[in-house]
Amino acid sequence: MSKLDLFSTFTSAYPAQPATAFWRAIEIGALASRNIPHGLGLDLGCGDGQLTEILLDQIGPRRLVGIDLDPLETEAAQRFPFYERVDTCSADAIPEADASFDFVVSNSVLEHIPPLEGTIAEVGRLLKSGGRFFFTVPGPGFHDNLAGTLSPWGDRASYLHALDKRLAHFHYLSPAEWAEMLGRHGLALDVCLGYLDLRETRRWETLSRFTGGLLYSAFGNSARPIEIQRKFGARALQNGASLPAALATPLARLMRAGVDVAIGEPRWTPVDIASCLLIEGHRE
Image (tube, one colour):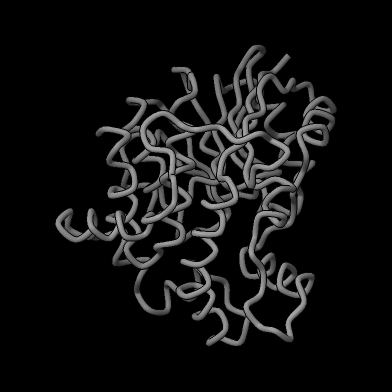
């Protein structure tokens, strides 16, 4: 699969989640450009495995162990042969042996985990000496790049609070804060790169506002997006079938129309103005 096809691929794989498809196409293009090693890897927050399948289509096969807290997600992930096993567990209590992994990958997961310190401690415990880690996370610039509420009576702080609640975002660490936390657990930050610029972020925001945002409001601002997807059968549909390319390709072009989105090799954004960060480093 060419990197040029990522937007169509994600639109096909996530037809009920156009905002997610838009964000992930940029994000996986960035992650796939890094030198993710071979050996045994931990997919921290593997979900249903579908996103990891797309990543491996880009970088080639890897041996993986998946972990996720949601048993319905880990059940779905077990269908993929690249997982040697899939554990249903909290990220701060992973049932794997010390120093058993050559690398850890976590894509847009750590911001959703309240016990972040314990999770990073587990990464430090599980990685071999010299083992690599690759995290993608939203950073402090995410809030800054959002357009905000459309209501003339709404205030920005309330809008951001409600959005974080819907997205279940608990953390927006800076590169310095990441380096400090990683260092407490024997991990060194080697590279921090920014992606998702202001225009890309606002295109995601528009798509999200009129899809997941509307559904969230309709369910009283209480149900998690994944619960809404399951209620309507969208999650099961995505795991069982994909949107045909004849429909996915023009839809993908429409979603990114007018936005200068990075295609092929990623276009890195300065970390102080980027919405998201790619954190890369090693076990000392």
